[in-house]
Image (cartoon, one colour):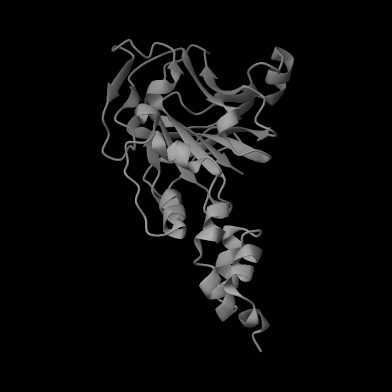
Length: 259
C-alpha cells in the first residue's frame, strides 16, 4: 500500500524540500504521492540558490518558466551570461550548487593584448563573445579570480581551464597550475599546492584534459573549500616560463564547479 499517498500533498512537498534534486527525482517514481508533490514550486524553490533572482537579474536573458522545476533544469542545461557577458552561471544538476565560468576577456593573460602573441576572436562554440587564441609566446601566464561570496557555501569547488587545441600546437605538454585564496595563503603554501597539468595530454602528469559535452576540453587546475564565503577572492594561475615556444591554445574561460 502507498502510505505516502495518504499524506496531504503539501506535507510531502515539505518533506521533499529537505532532500536534494537527485533524491526528489528518484522518489517521484516510487510513489504517486511523491510524483505529484515533486512538481511543486515549494520543493524546487528550496533547491534553487537563495540569490537566484539577483543573479538572473544581472543577465540579458529573459527567463520565463511556468514552474520552478523547469527554471531549475533550464539553469542546469543552459548557462546564462551575467555581468555584461563577463561570466556565465549555471547549476549543478545533482545538488543545485552554483557554477560559474569566468570569460577569457576577464582573465589576466601575459602579453594578451599583443597581437603578435595573442588574438581575440569569436568562436561558434563559445558561450562568450570572444576567446583568446595563442599564436606564439615563451612566457605563458594566465590568472583568473572569483569572489567566494557568490559561490555556494560549505562546498568544495574545482577550477577548470576550458580550452581547445589547434591541429598544430606546441609546448603545451606540461604546465604548472595552482589555486589559492589571495589574502590568506603564503607563497610557501602556494608552492605546496602547485601541480603539473598536461594541456596536450602527452606530458607526464596526473591531470589530463577531458572532453566536455559542449565540444571543448577541460583540465582540472586545483580545488578549494568555500566554507562561509568569507575568504575574499580565489585566484587560479596557469604558468610556464621555462622559455620554450608555446602555441596553438584557444581559451574560452575558467570554470568553477562543485566537486
